[in-house]
Amino acid sequence: MKPVYNFVSEDSGLITKTVSGFIPETAVIPLKKNGQDDVEILVKAGDEVKEGQVIARSSDTCSHSSIPGKVENIIRSKFADGSEGYAAKIRLEGVFSFSGKKLLETRWQAKDVQNLLFRIREGGVLNTFSEPVPLNVQIKKLDRSSDRFLIVRLYSEDPSRITDDFVTDHYFEKIKTGIAVTAKAMEARGILLAFDSRKPLPDGLEKEFEQETACVSMDSRNYPNGFMHEIVSSAKKTFKNSNSVFSTLGNRDLFIDSVTALNVYNAVVLEKPEITVELHVTGDCLNAGAVMTLKTGTLLRDVVAQAGGFKRQPGKIIINGKITGNSISALDIPVSKEIKSVAFVPFSQLPDQKKQHCIRCGNCLKICPMNLSPEALYRCFTNMDFKDENLKLIEKTAALCTECSLCNSVCPSRLPLSQTIALLKKEKNDEK
Ligand code: SF4
Ligand code: SF4
Image 1 (tube, rainbow, N blue to C red):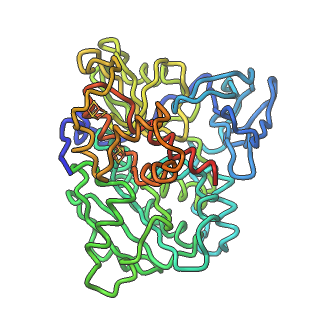
Image 2: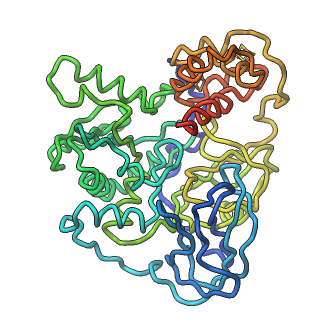
Image 3: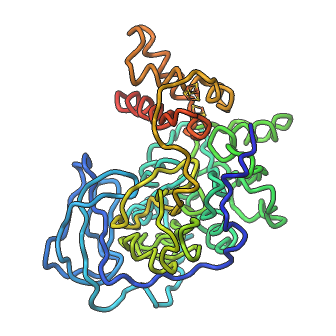
């Protein structure tokens, strides 16, 4: 494992409070991505919508209007994760149902498991621990034949963004309640809190939950140290000589992050759907960095304006962190529930982006924390360079990849190694 300090966000530590974003005059709310055939769009041009109204739904989740107004049109749009699909363009008018109102806490303790799951689904809560997925779907899929554990990462796994650290620091009481709600909804046997070793948790925290609770301290600056693999390994090491129930943790358990716990609190306790996003807006092209509370559907163009505009043109726009994120090329992309950060990086900070052939330098092999050979997996996938009988072995090997992206960061040929291995994993999962 290697420290990668040069990835650490330039403004971490400088940002001390959230800034409420302007209410956008027009919001572009993502409704349905290409391939999401089960999603039904519930509005059309000319419809009036309320703030928080469900405007698209599938059996798994729903999308809400983040502002009150009139649907101007249903348009084709690009989204922050690089996908494309349909979005509702909504012009602001009318009164707000949630914004500016004092929302009272409901008695979530009186709600049964079904009711909690219903509220999590109706609130449109996504679990953003890794690839975003509807939280209620993940909870329903958990194996009920054995004990289940809830593992909560309270820091950002990509040190170039601060969103999870930030919400942990600023909304800890709400996050604790979100954790308690999630643990009840999944009928968890225990809760493990993975926290940043630089910011110890308050004493006695373990006693605050109904379920057996323990903490593991993680060095978040030592990347990678926030994926499922590292947290499970650390728990196994911490509890190996005890009879602790936490020594049995594994990837069958439920992993969430601070942002997800906060959104569970909002959806269940305040009965407020996921219509805002805490977004770390950063990068040396901007006049100011901030963590902004933004309405979903706010265009990145408007986010830049709120950050004081550009002081120089960006060479790249990076979504969700410099190590694990992806880059996009346009500013007319809306803020959506999957985004935690956006960085506007100048040309001068970009390495040569031209993709070349593998020069067999071995850097990716040396850095891979899972001891994989990213170059070999990449070659197999792109050239289909393997015998059919080896396919299962290749897929099993690819399944061990944590998608930490370290291999990408050291590849002098700029090959998209982790993205390609992720495709290999996806093909395997799709076959199931
Ligand atoms: S993304 Fe996968 S293959 Fe690349 S370094 Fe990380 S674990 Fe290894
Ligand atoms: S780091 Fe890149 S160039 Fe070097 S061996 Fe790996 S894939 Fe090839």
